[in-house]
Image (cartoon, rainbow, N blue to C red; front, top):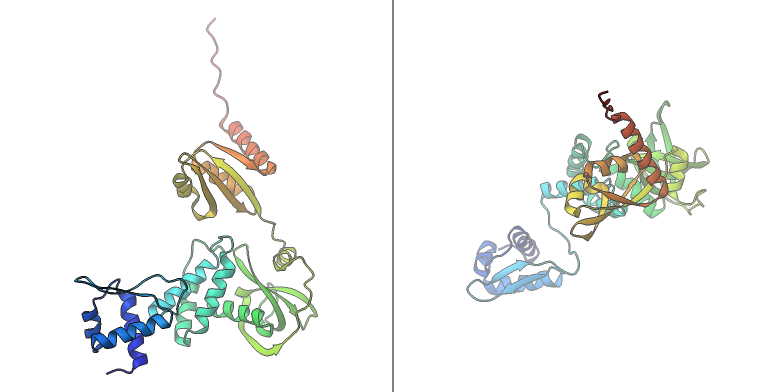
Length: 324
């Protein structure tokens, strides 16, 4: 008979594979009595796994949703799929998703064995995601840099700047920033004695040095503002529109690139953020419904200019001369 710990893990694995198990079937799969099975179920509950039990002919056990997320038991393929999925979520463009996804990716990759990390990096490098417009960044690079920022630990890495030879850098990492489909590290460069932003897709072999540092004052409002100033990236523009169409129809045309809030069955509020007004204008045209611009006024002027240009391009129908 397997020892208690390994048997408990085996029980958890079985509960995760099926919605419902009869007590007799579970006990038979584990090679234990139903009394021992009940003790193992209680042990899982003590560890935070909400195992439900029901009596009667159709009685048995099932793993129910809990108030908190307990540890998960994943096989190799599941672990790789989870890490790749979280990596895609870091570049989803959904407000607030990048930071949470990066924290989750850091936790997952940290416990992956090297052979699985290699699979994650290979899949991310060779997969094109509809949500990612920039170059793929290996999960190991992303998590190593994020952990160094969190732990306030100096970081060394190879770096290839555009038009320059490869260099070795040692920095005091500050924050990781997702902007314009790319990932950046904002850090104080110890060799240049100044603040810099580094693209993560141009980094190689980032490694923490175990040397901790006291954070310096960033010469900008925040890390995003610093990257924008250095890279020349335009500030995001947010538009708000009342669309006279059902939310489901607007969602089909816009997808996840906008936030849609139903007002009633025949109208919804659409909010979109972009680096220019061109894309929201095109998106509204794709919806094919009447709409009212809530703001900003600059967007209304932009749409009006587009409309006038389209009207001029289509031309007016030729007037027919009346017979004399």
